[in-house]
Image 1 (cartoon, rainbow, N blue to C red):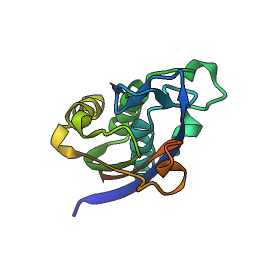
Image 2: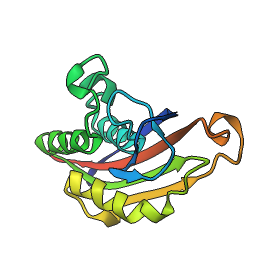
Image 3: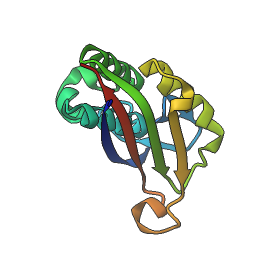
Length: 161
């Protein structure tokens, strides 16, 4: 019987002017971007937290602290690659990732395929192992008012011996 572990990731960021909007390693044309110490790519951040949680290896903020200038404006896909390598070293195999992004605007469905390819490439898995979908905030709360975005992710890992 395989040793399977599931992890959950959650993140949210404010939208601010003067920042590029990065989601899943894709620069999405929009008048604002997600604020963060790194490039603010909340999709990569939730995936990392879900994977780290499933493997019991900590969290993004501990491994890549926002107090460390080395991570200022860093490409989050490169951090995801580091997590992928870390998982391989401890014999964890990524079986599935499933993500939901909550954003009133912009519409993200046009970019799903590239996001899946980017995430899969960073982790050395197939794009078919990455699920990405987006929902609106239904004009409710701070996301619905267009002040930011949220994302959630589950990850399923097989733990090797």
